[in-house]
Amino acid sequence: MPDGLVRKMALPASTAITGTLADSSLRLLETHSCEVRWFGRWIGVEAIVSVGNDALLGVALLGGCDLRINYCTSKVTVSAS
Image (tube, one colour):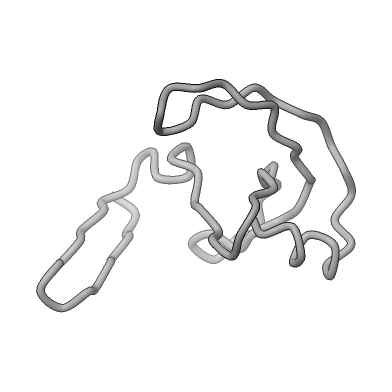
């Protein structure tokens, strides 16, 4: 989650985790507690703070889901399996 959004939403700091980046380097990443609405219910998650404007969905939320990506139409669909 972008740092500016974390501050704007005043999310409480949680912990820091060691994450592996795309280049295989390790980085200490700050996390904040928040809730997301996922398939009609609110669940608690840890948001990893990022530099920049990108928000990434953790793959743990996709467990038990069907993920379809249509590159031609730029459409992404996530449904419960």
